[in-house]
Length: 354
Image (tube, rainbow, N blue to C red):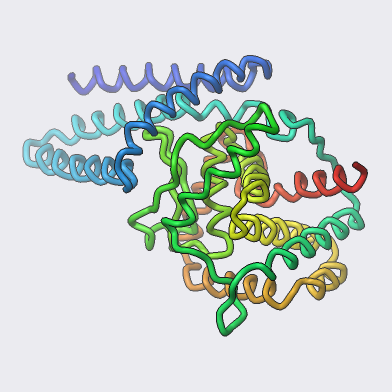
């Protein structure tokens, strides 16, 4: 294909992508039942193919693609065909973007997990946030007593592989309680190039092209089971980060594995505490005092763990992720991760009045 033909083909792909996004943004909620069914079936086939090996297939494919790009660049430079190489890169990128949107990306415009479960959120008073934070602190305190600790009172967890085998159990339970969940049809895989992800601030990533839910093994231990369930939530079709976080909490608490239940309660406490801290530091301090020494030790250890990776690389990665989320109608960008507190407070209030 000649250079000009590649440019024209890329333009066509971009137009098709734009049309899909426009349809997704304007489509009524019922349409997403059909899209999600298509998306889940396609992802099931892909994850079935890639699931036969324990490693993340997409990492291998990405490496091969990079090596091929370098090789072809060298060849094109030698022959004076740089524009030809650039047009090839353009076609590849446009093709991947179209496939991403068609396979999974439109889930960003679908009904939220709250809408599917009939759980409404609204602006909350400081007192309501305070009560919810207390409730999740108590939940974490209770479950912490069932977990082993080290000499520093930091909670100890099983290794990555052991946890990964149990990650989908909560979704199996949820699928029997709610129509908006299905059994986890794929396992969680370990990211091999974890230092790169750690310095980028990435704890997990879902890849629609291969149907793989991937988690950084360097994620702080108390958050690891929760993160696994978060990435499996993306596999369920919940693209928004606050939705995936709430699904992760529900899946953790539905699990018969106490490691997952504690991770879910610990994460919920952290999100609600942070929300309260932003609104009223004095009340947040009161909630902090109710947290057990073990829970507080986990919070401190997590801060220490992630602090060593802070830097320019993480800032750039955060900005890129922020731009991606906003492009898919998540106006809060990276702040949407913490927006799960709204769901958690709504759940607390619903159970309080039940």
